[in-house]
Length: 229
Image (cartoon, rainbow, N blue to C red; front, side, top):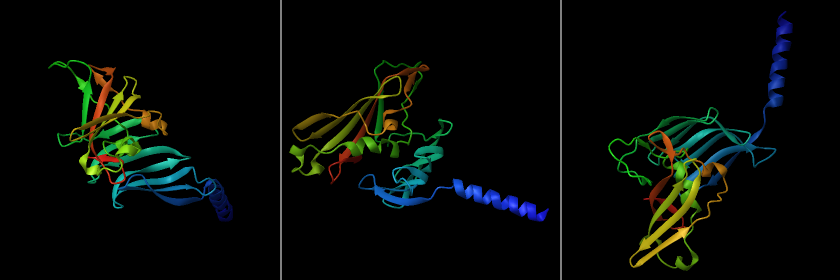
């Protein structure tokens, strides 16, 4: 009886190992301050598998969760650059479990094209990934125009403006650059490389989805991209 049990147990181990997939660790940079550490399949290094982490200045976790066959799965936790919890999202159940409260110190502002009064019940749009990590792709896609590259980036102020449709899709994406006696609006391409960067939880007004705008105060980095002000 004992021998049969040992043989059965050994068979389970062998079967499990057959299904296990060997992975290798990758390290890349998302922005000047944000690095990524994740695993990919050894047999296909374009396929993420296992633990994924985004780190601010190589020490503060911004995002952590698991990939299964290149898709986010299970609970993911998102933080700001100070390590404060921003959001918890269940990618398997497609359910937002936690969203941190936002105060006046936030770099983000929200607008709807409707007149609100004391009876209005409105909710803001929500980006899965939280108010820091979730918005990094829009900031990092911007590059200072060629004709402005000889100017010190510190003279510019920048504002990102995102238009979100009632269906929760990115509909427009602009960057407003200003300096002394200078103002330019740059219309960005909304055909973003990642489909998930097109998707938001839409704003609502009295329970109905509504179009909204997200405005983000930024500065131009030394590399010509944007970061939160």
